[in-house]
Length: 224
Image 1 (cartoon, rainbow, N blue to C red):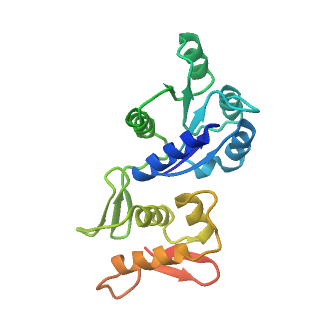
Image 2 (image 1 turned 90 degrees about the vertical axis):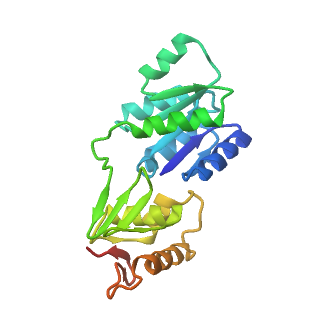
């Protein structure tokens, strides 16, 4: 899963990003309100959640939250705020925030609130993803081929999940990068090819036909 951090204190943004990475998330961050508004408007489909600081240069977190909801963007938003006033909290929730966390905070509490938000039911959320003989569970991070469990790294898991959610469709490298790496990764390197080859070695072992097919000049397709 991928999270956008909006925080003007770059040191804190980096700390949150590193902590999220250790927990298996991918994260980007921006440091002012105008950057955040633009990133969310054009790239909100790339993220599963936004961690949004309230006090930002150029545009406040409250303004961003209000604008995003007025545009019909329903991505979950967790507000970070130094304000502990009840009315401020009411205003945030009324503006469309899903939750808030008062600074200073412990990272464990931040993770607990993130997980609580992401556990909330979504119309399109599926507990298990199935494609052919493959079964993938996003909550337990387990992958089965038939009844045999396949051990995958976090990046391998993320790539396979995206392919399984688009079975028999051609998925290009840019889509896989957008959904599994930071925003500033070089899209022209061969990192996707490396991970696809690792996945193939794990999935196609002792099988006569490869599961992930290369479509020359276009990308990859999970054959079901």
